[in-house]
Amino acid sequence: MKIAICDDVEPIRDYLKGLLDETKESHEITLFADGKSLLETDVMRYDAIFLDIEMAGINGVKVAEQIRHEQEKACRDIWGGMPLIIFVTGYKEHMPEAFDVHAFAYLLKPFEKPAFDKIYEQMVSVWKKHTPCSKQYLLIKVRGEVKRIQVDKILYIESEKRKNIIHLLNEKIVYYGSMEELEKELPDDFFRVHKGYFVNMNYVEKYDRSEITVKGGDVVLISKYRYAEFVNAYLLFIR
Image (cartoon, rainbow, N blue to C red; front, side, top):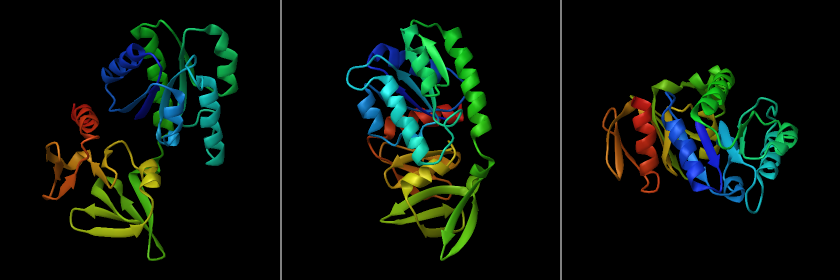
């Protein structure tokens, strides 16, 4: 799952991340200290967002309204649709506002692990129901024809200007497309290790701080800014 945690209190961010790290699912977790930073990213890439309400600048309710607006523009379902929004706050009086933006859950501070676990289990259950079977396949257009690629056969994907190159074990497929749109279509087995590369973690054979070697011997570059996050995601993935 791709999860964002947005809270202006660092210990809360760290506590939530720690609880997520203890679960059995593999997560790609991104931390934000304020709503503005979150909204400057592609919020639609996240499956779930843990969102504080009382924050400096844009409060959590306003952030949620912007997220729902993005969903409407993308013609996505709002009620029960991705991303799931879990408000994390110390104020019960915000509950009516949470319903107005179709929040999935309301985690009241201070909270203990059992309260988190209950919401987390519900969140994962809904996420699994919303993860489309079509993620087993990638539909792309190659020279005017739609081609179906089995996702679990992809070693890695690289971007070269406006061209995406899908690397299979014995084949390369080139087509025109956006890496940002592609990221929304790929399952969590894939990690964006560089602005120009997605790697299928099922095929990672070895890695260091600058590159990853996949099955077959191809080498994929890894950004120094993504290295720590990749290692965390990969260790969770193989656990």
